[in-house]
Amino acid sequence: MKTYIILFFTIIATVIFNTGCNFSNDSNQVDNDSLNNVDLNGEHSKKVKKIFYNVPSPIEMTSVIEKSGAEYKPEILNSYKIVDKYIKVPKQALILGVYGSDLSYVRLFDQIQLSINYLSSIKKLCDELNIPEEQGSFAISRMETNMDNRDSLLEIVTETYASADAYLKENERGNTATLVILGGWIEALYISTTIVDFDLEQNKAIIDRIAEQKYSLSNLVELLKSYPEDKDLQEYLPLLEVLKSKYDLVQIEYIKGNVVTEKDKKLTTINSIAKVKISKTSFEDIKASILSIRSKIINN
Amino acid sequence: MNSILKKVAIVAMVMVLPFIVNAQCKGFTKKECMPSLKPYVYNGQLNSAVLNEGDVAELLLTFYSGQDYRIFVCAQDMLGNVEFKLLDTDRNTIFYNKDHDFVKFWDFKSNSTQQLIVQVRVPVAEVKSEIVQSGCVSILAGFKE
Image (cartoon, chains in turn cyan, red):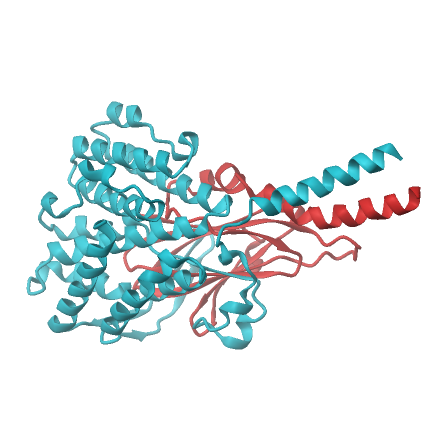
């Protein structure tokens, strides 16, 4: 009898505790009844319990810059020195994303000391956001001992962001994780649009990658919409809708090809062709729109 | 009295079960799944949820041309053989792991940038039981620079 009473109160206390910790606006965990308007297949998506929206990471976004031979312009970045001016949580989350892209960019040009400086500011922001160090893997000492190893640097940057994202989402702070993603995506696009010259043939790969962000933008908009009660995220929604309207003029035409699966290599190759059409005017409009969102993010 | 308390305890246990299962998802991806993505670079976004048997989850993903991708579907063992498919936006199947012994990961290469859908389905237990099986499922995407 006594055992049941103890068991009963333990369970009730656990339920209350769990509910008490669950005050965040993390509506992304709801079943997808509210997400049925996604551009998949209306009828089908009703049966899907959860839809995830993925937005490219800063590393993925900036990797194309390396191949293009674009010039290194550190002066365009958001300085790591001004980290202390960001004191509000939403701003700190956005800047965490911004610094992630800045760090990915300087890493491409082997700027090790600058990479360490950015990582130090990232660590500071993570402390402010209560992301535990063990989750963040901020091994600055690891970076210092791997100064000449770009792969190690890539691993540290990836691990840091992946761990921070996982920690935030697993602790019902998906809205904060989304702010980090938003900040990182905008900064990566800002860097890409700022360093390229539309008229240069060698920049075509970057221009195409910028144009292809049309898809990621749709994913990002859906991601933001899944947190309707987060006023900080919702503030950016109209700005992203404006950017989306600029992207509507970008045309991507597909020609489907065959699909080849090599069982021994565990590899499937999709042989389709995409033709990207973006005019200089559209590019400039997109660039201006990104600049205005980025200004809102980095200014207090 | 004893029997009433017993019933209340069972009801409370049912109420608390989702929280316990949710807690099981914590750390699962990092510990059990992320290491298997190597040598691919994890794209840094956690896509994990507690799913019940019969549930379907989808991840909308952009594959960029010239980059190689690894999709890894990581699920707790209790869920059995979790199925995953790669679909194009017209919902044509590009890959189905059921045709490959329910393999947990597969590599993909796209010659052009496109949106693709990773669809995951948790199997329904063959033996019907009162308790619905649930567990943590993560969809991870890695790419090669």
